[in-house]
Amino acid sequence: MNDQELRTNLIAELGIGDLPPEAQDEIVSKLGEIILKSVTVTIFEKLSPEARQEFEVLTTTGDPERIRAFLEQSVPDMETLMADELKRTLIAFREGDQLVGDNA
Image (cartoon, rainbow, N blue to C red; front, side, top):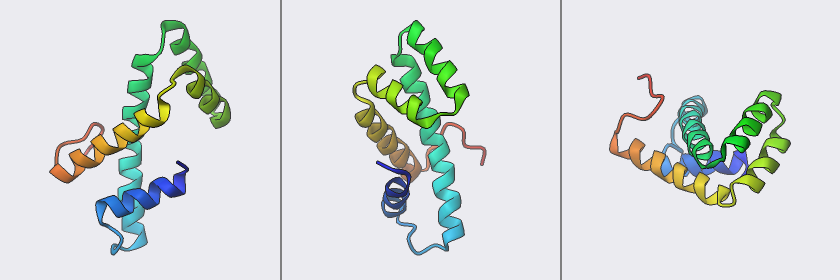
């Protein structure tokens, strides 16, 4: 799923399509950060100690293609993991739970 598809899905799932684009962007950005943090923690927990070190080095390079290739090789269920974290975050958001990283 690319960024635009994710954004479109989040807007639809949250029912915020009628909000001004700036408000949509703010909500999507905040949830995106939360989802990214959650996915990163979950991935890190699944990696071996050696793979964790490699992941840390790769994330400092900022090369998304190398990071994606590494994760696809090291975390076979990556797409499922991302989808699960997205669902979990959306459920928590709908239920009004305090989300990880939520400073509000």
